[in-house]
Length: 346
Image (cartoon, helix red, strand yellow):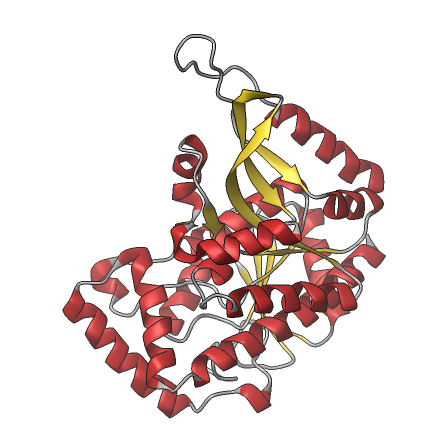
């Protein structure tokens, strides 16, 4: 297993080594993109240790600076304290290579502290990057904060089977008319990575999201509960297709998916801790008001979710942001334990 992981890393380095792919003014070569894996993550993968991928959109677009940086550090620390290695994923440019007129754009898997601080300070200046945006960010040597879909892609490419996030995207409310459906759902249907989240963001249409995931063939398991969680609250009122009760249960589920080569992801939905759960009626009232404001302002597409989350936080007096931070930390705790269990059985 360790040799297999190491071979994947070697092949990736060969595949993404800079080549003269295009010219700019004669001899000025612009290097193509490559994946840069931090030494800590690389060593963990080569040794078969548990690794947990982390997205970067929550850092750049999820909360203000410096709270975003502190939260990111705390989440990584939780992963380490529970025996796994964190691998925050992002796209950053501007790093010199070889000679002055050559530069690489790095798809970073495992940010250094300096890179993490840079991303946090960039905030919304870093483009929110889903699958569709990757090639543009790479081609223009931009800065990208990876969403669930993009993080899943890069995690899968380097052999990280577990990814922790706050909550996944889904079918937006009134999605039957707007066709606004997050690429997170289609990515779960075609990328074999287990996503640990607090369910679906409650600003979305949860029952339609569950139906869409069923169509995509995604295994959905609720952790220590029979009911699918709703991000800010423990329960959504909808039964989860299956249940897992321990990190070991989750690990066997992931191992079976890998061995069967089904090429689909798994969603493990972890309820927010009871002490941090927000009042369902208060949250729903804030969501309805925020949705109305978004429609009146013409806010749609990938700008809608950040607006809704920020507005709900304002309307709840900061309670929703506190809940958001609590649930991502809890997900990191659970995800790290699952990663360790998976490493032990593989």
